[in-house]
View (spheres, one colour):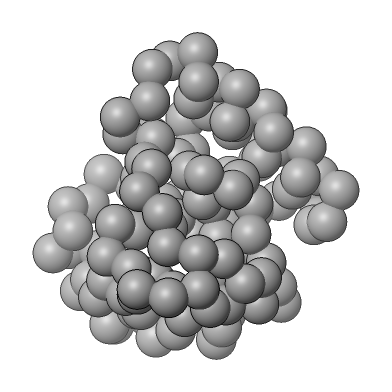
Length: 124
């Protein structure tokens, strides 16, 4: 699942740093439906939920295509080293597009934020 812009003010576990309603509902969904889950961070790449990090300001939405491709290569390697071969991605196109070669299921693809929140509420 993707990180978000709304963050707490002090270092803490990544799962507790991100505060947006979409992140909170996505977290509830993955905790219920997935064996393991990770956060796609524009700054850190792949984060285990318990990894302690400080607040930061970085997003793939403001990266150029080359930087997104480098990020995607890094995250793909990280995913392949810690997880299986098939993934559920609760993330927007900017976070999924660079993950070339991965088998990604995107159950909320094409939905706006409001519809994503509604989908997560129904599915949780």
